[in-house]
Image (cartoon, rainbow, N blue to C red; front, side, top):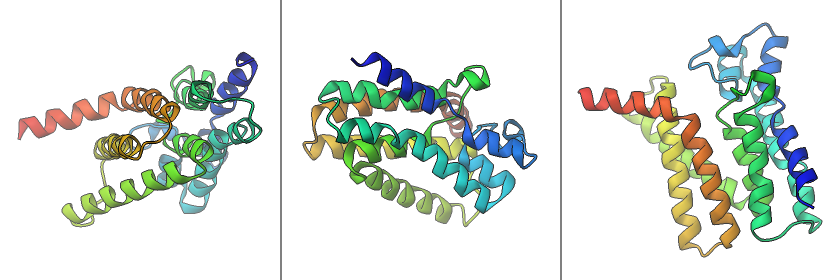
Length: 202
């Protein structure tokens, strides 16, 4: 039975921990940078410590209870992809924020940690680290813009997908990657469009 676990995963993903932590410390994340109610904007608004707590909670809602379902063998094959995408959808379209949730990066790390025993999330973290380091060096250490971060998130995820294909990973992980990519791209479509307009105008 996939419906009840799917609803549990969806509900977990919809819990907007970073946004709520921001309210607790007197910061409204919709007024920070690009208005994304996620851990990075919490970090920018409330500092390192609170940001790390928000990121950890957003990660864990993607990781738990997904890792429990997988390790206990409740699901296999493509059903894992269906269950695993639910926390991402919950975060991206949270009913607690009138279905205007966050960009789901921390939750993405959570589900890939659960489905690949941290291998996929580690690869994505390394890829993003390299891309963002290169961007910082190119801009001589200037703070990155949200639109640039969005492009790097997507580029890094595309590279992860290529690695998954070349590495002969299980087919359900490729299906999960596709689901995840569509959501990440949709949540960043305005940032990417703005980035492209600026680049084409130069």
